[in-house]
Structures are given as C-alpha cells and as structure tokens.
Length: 248
Image (cartoon, rainbow, N blue to C red; front, side, top):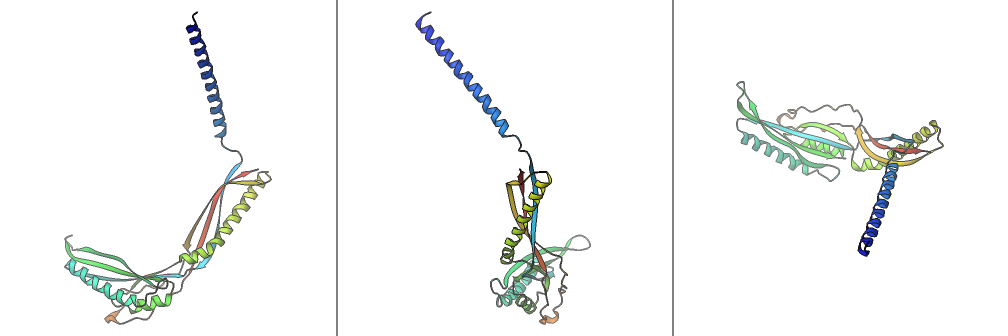
C-alpha cells in the first residue's frame, strides 16, 4: 500500500472514531435530558385567600337629562346647553379627590313611529360627580338645574384599598402556609418546601340596600331640591395566594 493510501486510511479511521464518540455523547445527553424533564414527585397544588372588610369611601353620583324632538340637531343643541350649565354649577364646588366632575355618556337616538319609520329623535346626557366628600357631592347634585340625580353608587378608593391590602395579604399567606403544613403531615411527610407561588388581589362590594332613586322629572319648575341622604356600606379587599409545594 502506498504512503498516500495509508494516510487516507488512518484519517478515515480517526473520523469514524470521533463520529462514534459524538453519537454516544449525544445519546447520553438525550437520556439525561429525559430524566431532568421527568415530573417531580410529591408536589401539591393549593390556594388560599385572606379578606378584610372596609367601609366604602367613594361616592359616584350620575346626573342625567333627556330631550326629544323632530330634529336631531336641535335635540343635541338643547342637551349641550343643559350640560354646560350643569358643569358651570358643579365646577364651583369641585375639589380634587373630594369631588371630581366629569361628563358621562351623551347620545342621540332615532325615535320610531307606528309605521317603523323615524318620526323624531331623543337624546340623553350625563355628568358624573365622584369623590370622598359625600355631603359636597349630594349638595351639589341638588343645586344643579335640569339634570336630576339618575343613579348613585359607592366604591372604594385606591388609597383605602391599599391601606388594608397588606393585612389581607398577610392573612392569605398564613392560611396558605397552614394548609401546606397540614397536607404534608396528613400524607406522612415531616414538612414542605415552596416551589412556586402567585399573589393576586381584588376588591368587591358587599350587598347594600339600594338607595331610592330620584325621578328624572323630580325638579318641577327648576326648584332646587334638598340634598339626598346617603350612607355607604362595606367592601371586601381579597388577596388570593396560589402555588405548589414539595412535600418532604
């Protein structure tokens, strides 16, 4: 055999050995990956929650006006004038956080007759008074002309929610830990370790007696009405904790 043939033979042999080694290494790595991907044993999924009741400190009052007529433009113009006048009155008492004033929905809709054809237009406009000063809001609502109180509701301000959110979270975490410990012991384990956890918060209003609604035509002759008495109920700030633990 010539020198060149021998060199080619040795080179081919080395290449085959290297390829075989890589294939073996790849097989070993794949087996190790399968083992690492195996589902862990003795893992429990659980959840808990903590809640705190807090008095609602936010009042939302909606004032509304309706108009109707043959011409849509005229109806819109009438509503715009009513809203502008109402805003002028409400803004005099506005104070950030205590009573904020904003416009609500505004719409013009066709009115249909017996023959299912449009025979006129009707519109509705709203302004919203919202804040923590209940007396200021109800008194202002009584002073606004041509836009009676259409709806009233209560809520929880961000400050009030954040104030008690930490307490609700501590309750939820403690309950989660107690459940995890109880489950571990019930299954015959000495304890547990935390694998993953998720914490989420929410707040919801508790059932409240609905306040009496003022009729849309209550302000006869533009007379100013007395301020409506209101009383807030309670809301619940709830923190949910969920996750998994490894029993040991």
